[in-house]
Length: 239
Image (tube, rainbow, N blue to C red):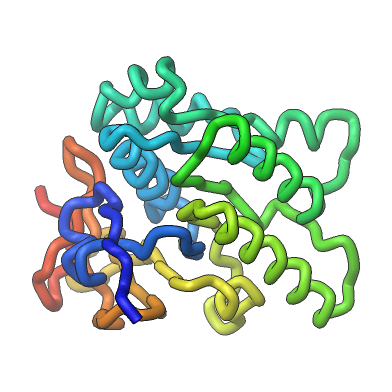
C-alpha cells in the first residue's frame, strides 16, 4: 500500500527524524512536563499549515488561546496575520465548558465541538490542548478506551491531522492515548548535572509506518522558535 505524502511540522530538524513529516489524517499524542515546549511545538505545526494555505484550529480546554498566540508571536509575528485571516482558528472551549459548571468536560462534549469546527472551518490541522483536562464519563477502563478510540477515529474520518497535547504526570504509567494514537512524541525538560542547568529534548516513542530513532534529540528554543539538533550527547542549551 502506498504511503501518502507526509506533511511538515514546521519545526526545524524534527521532520528529518520521522521520514519527512507526519502522515496526514492521523492523530498524534504530544506529551511532556510543564515548560518542555508543548504549546510552542503545537503552534509551529498550525503555523506551518496556515502558511501552506490550510485551515487550522487550536482548541484550548483551559487557557485563553490568545496567550498561545502571544507566545508564538515572540518567535514569528506573522502568526497574528493568520489568526486574523482565520487560517488559524482559535476556539476558547475551556471558557465555555468551565464557566459555572465546575467539572471537567467529557469526551463527548469535546468531540461535538470539534465536529462543528471541522465542518464550519474545513480544518485540516487540529490541536487540542490539553486533553488531560477532559474527564471520561465513566470509570470503567474498557469504556474509557472505547470512548477515546471513538474520539480518535472520528477525527481521522474527517481527514484531520491532529495533535493531542497531554501533561506528563507519571513517567512509569502509559495511559490509553499512548496506545491508541498513531504516534507519541515526548518532550523532556530536566536538570543536566553535566552543565548545571535545565535542558530540553524530544523523543519519538512510536510513529506508525515510520522509521525513527527512539533516543532523545536536543530540543532548543531559538529566536525563531523550537529547533531539533542531531548531536548525540549534547542536550545543553546554546549560549
